[in-house]
Every structure is written in structure tokens, then in C-alpha cells.
Image 1 (cartoon, rainbow, N blue to C red):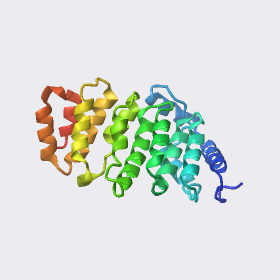
Image 2 (cartoon, rainbow, N blue to C red):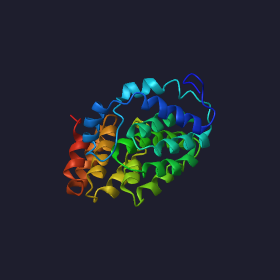
Image 3 (cartoon, helix red, strand yellow):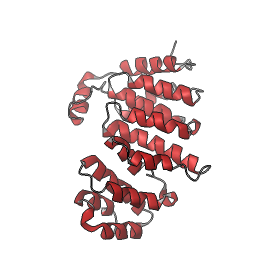
Length: 233
């Protein structure tokens, strides 16, 4: 099968992506990329613009939700991180075909060889799915309420940041409630997520964020508070 032929099965698509990216592998670039991730994961050495340009024609598939998630899962079985990024590229491109039942599989992917680089890409997809579902079902965000209590810190991070980019559509009760719930945690990535989520909303309602940070006082870590208010005049 050539790159110009659209895949008709998840297995074909995963194979096309594997071959396309393997052909672009740059061992010299892989060294600093691996070092940036504390030498915890292997890399092909492909920069994001190059990866996305190579995959653009391959991702023009007519897959349903099941096939999209299957393809993503197959890509996650490959060791190099670029294949996880490719999985997120695929899901993001076709996010409109995903519904609330995709959240559990997406959170399962987030728990595989987890680190912020793969998790945050999935968080954006989760957020898009939940936001779309909320337009139909006002209780759609309850799936994130459950994620907030998950044993895996990366799932909790997704819950904290899933509303990034929602602007004034943000559910502020959840934003501030989640931040307060997670505030006692000492993990860097949780504290950073709290600050990131608050800072994002502060672009649209700085006074609300300022007041929340002030009310929380020392219950909010200095990192979270600093991140939350970094762009508030």
C-alpha cells in the first residue's frame, strides 16, 4: 500500500504511519529529544512540523470512533514517542467523530507510559469531546468529576486542564472546585496544571481568578498561585 492510498482498517493506518515516520528518523535529533524527557523514552528524532506534514495525507481516513481508537491504541504499542503524538494527531483531526463513550479509552491511553508530553495532547481531545457532549447533555462533565478522583495523577491532571480554551464557556464551579480539591497535592505536574488552568481562564475573567487565589491563600501552592496570576495586571 502506498502513502497515497487511504487506509481502510486501523491496522493499515497504523502501518502506514509507522513506515512514514520510521523513514524520517533522525538519530542525531533523537538524542536531545530523549534527554529533554530525562532519557525515559525513545524517540525517532522527528520535529513536530515535519511529523505533521508527513502524516497529513495519511490521516484523511473515514473511520468511525471504534476504528480511530483502535488505530490510536496500535500506535501506542510502538515504543517511540512520536507514535503517541501521531495518535493524538489522528484523534484531534477526527475529534468530531468521538462521543462521551470515548473518554474511558482516552483516559486508558493516558495511563500508558505516561508523561506530560503524551498526556497533555490527549487532554485537549478529552476537553473537545466533553465540551461537545455538554451541548447535548448538561451532565456530560460528570465524567471529569470521576476523573478528578482517579488514582492516576495524569488522569487527575486531565480533569484539571480539560477546560483549557473554553473561554467564557468554562464551568467555573468545576474550575475552582477542582483546583481546591487538588491543591493539597504535592506533585509538580498537578500544581502546574492548577496554575495553567487558572491562568487560561484569567485571560477572560481575571478578577474571578484573582479573588480565588486570594481566598485560597496558603492553601494554594506558590507554584500554582504564581502560574495563575502570571498574566494578570
